[in-house]
Image 1 (cartoon, rainbow, N blue to C red):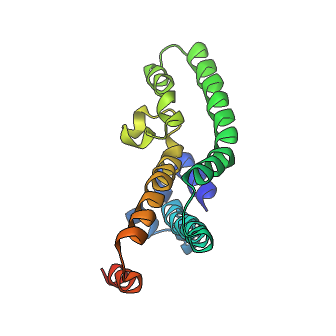
Image 2 (cartoon, rainbow, N blue to C red; image 1 turned 90 degrees about the vertical axis):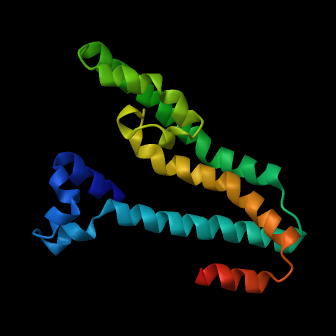
Length: 168
């Protein structure tokens, strides 16, 4: 859904404008990339949360080192290759068409992708703008283990805490 949604958007942005798609076939409403990204965040959060809860239940502690090393080696090798290929691609575009100042700006911001902070700069200036969701997910990975450890250390009535969170 995300790939098709982006394809439709970049082919013809009218496909992803909600008010405009109401006139089109229900088929195009199904391929809304924004809903797929939301679903991905929910599934990812559930997966990471359940991994952390299982580890805590098994060991009565969390190994931050193990958690972050697993996340790093799961994502970074492919991501580094993608960023490297993106640098080559943008450099080729810049060299073949010198009247594109936006490419220079995007190339200058490649480091924000490597640090997963590209979602804090305007999308027009992002090196690989489609990686904003990965940045948010990595920030989630950084904060959630700290939240869970704090939760288990300071909250005695865990069940009631979760019930309250659910209703809030």
